[in-house]
Length: 32
Image 1 (cartoon, helix red, strand yellow):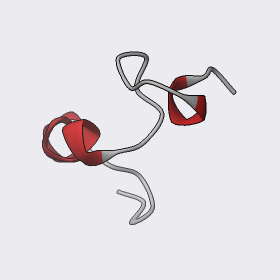
Image 2 (cartoon, rainbow, N blue to C red):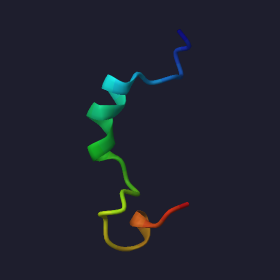
Image 3 (cartoon, one colour):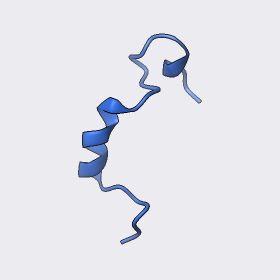
Image 4 (cartoon, helix red, strand yellow):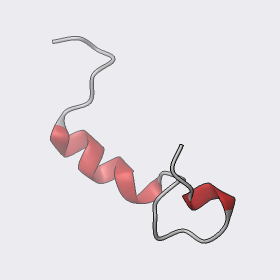
């Protein structure tokens, strides 16, 4: 397995802490 690829379980733990969610107000929530 490539070390740079996250598993679904790893991503599920990280996702709530990442910027850019649609639920975040302001510029950080915009779709890039």
